[in-house]
Amino acid sequence: MTDAPVDPTGTSAWARLASLAEGFSPDLREWFDRDPGRTERLTFTAGDLLVDLSKSLVDDDVLAALLDLADEVGLAARREAMFAGERINVTEDRAVLHTALRLPADAPADRRPRVDGQDVLADVHEVLGRVYAFAERVRSGEWTGATGERVRTVVNIGIGGSDLGPVMAYEALAAYRQEGLACRFISNIDPTDAATTLAGLDPATTLFVVSSKTFGTLETLTNARLCKQWLLDGLRGLDGGLDEDAAVARHFVAVSTALDKVADFGIDPENAFGFWDWVGGRYSLDSAIGTSLVVAIGPERFAELLAGFHAMDEHFRTAETARNVPVLMGLLNVWYTDLLGAQTHAVLPYSQLLHRFPAYLQQLTMESNGKGVRWDGTPVTTDTGEVFWGEPGTNGQHAFYQLIHQGTRLVPADFIAFANPAYPLQDGENDVHELFLANFLAQTRALAFGKTADEVRAEGTEESVVPARVFTGNRPTASIMAPDLTPAVLGQLVALYEHITFTQGVVWGIDSFDQWGVELGKQLAQQVGPAIAGDADALGEQDPSTRSLIAYYRENRRR
Image (cartoon, rainbow, N blue to C red):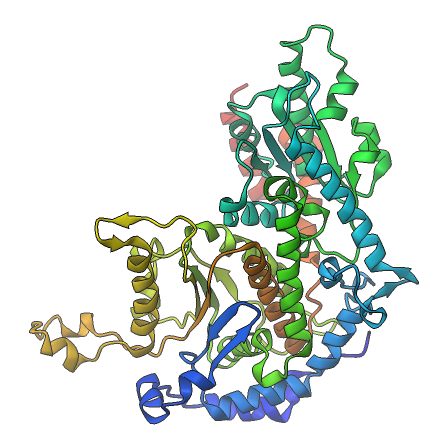
């Protein structure tokens, strides 16, 4: 699908939005007082999620214009093209089919996408079946290391989407892990990452999953070689007659399609699980990239995760625009970013288990939509790609909420919470989870409605301090709740943000599925490396600032 994108700023809906934004003066207190049905009208369900958008900075006129904008930029057609397997990743000439990773095996023929004539779904479930069978062997103890001991620790080696998704989900689903079987994760090429992750592990009971589609990612392969050496050094201490090739084959598996490189490393190609170029790294959690997670929580729970993804996919695909949660949230983000001047977006999970969720969303949203050109190569006509960030509550309340409440910047925020805790505890007569949720509810109320000067004075506050204790309110939030943080609900949350990101990208006319911005720095690192190592010619090719920094490094590096 290579049609030129619609310029959103040239649509009649955009003109209406721009007119509404001029002098826009939201008053959530008044809106709620005047409209008793606001909460019900702006609260939606999608799968197991309850999503309350009533504290958003929209009135009926703004919402109507946003819905018309979705129509005018062709959101529905672009969405259908994605689900059908059309090559909407234009700059790489690829289909975009992460949604196929969670399609049920018995999906009807009209829902089974094909790429170059190949039945994508058959391939997906063939690999998934192999991953499940491998995971069961590890979980049962059938798979053993070189010394015959069962695996106790799985170390996932990957970076970007090969790390952020698995580690986020592993942390989020702690309550579902198999006892006696742990996962650790190595991503950074900083040697500290490998050294500290491997510290305290027993080589005889450690299994490594090397996740690299091409088996050529610099950081991942460097760390894989470090782990291989650590393994062999440790096993030699246990067995002087160690068969190194056999040991590597028992302690390493791969997620890769480069079977020749996998074999050269010493991994049995039978223990390599592939995925496809129509799966972007940041969309690959539910592919074989999730192998370490499948081992941790088991195939049955992973299948529930996939079902959650699929439930949100179906909501996004079939729900009418006016009640389509990812579409509405994506359109709201466009309104905040392009018409109201917001530059960042906070994601604030009131669940410690989701402490890596904001970091995961940073790659999903900013690598997808941090673009300055549209999919036809022309410059964008609007701001794109707000900065996503966040921390779990209530930690954030004691760190950065000050700025969100009383600062000069507009920071839309998504609050996420669950009715039931994974680990319920009592503090005497107090249900600790209820104390926690009281903060979740209080924060969105405070951000929406604030505190007036008269309300501050009524508390007996000295007049000189009154201005400092006023809260203006009208700070936009979305509240997302579910009964429990289950594998299915986690899948729904991730897919929700995938489709929010897609919606924004379509409005902006950008290719949300390439990532050329990560390439230049990697290319230059290859050129700078020899200069750091002492190559005078390579050093001479650097700019003055880089030469100066290299000189400092060489003067201070201890060998």
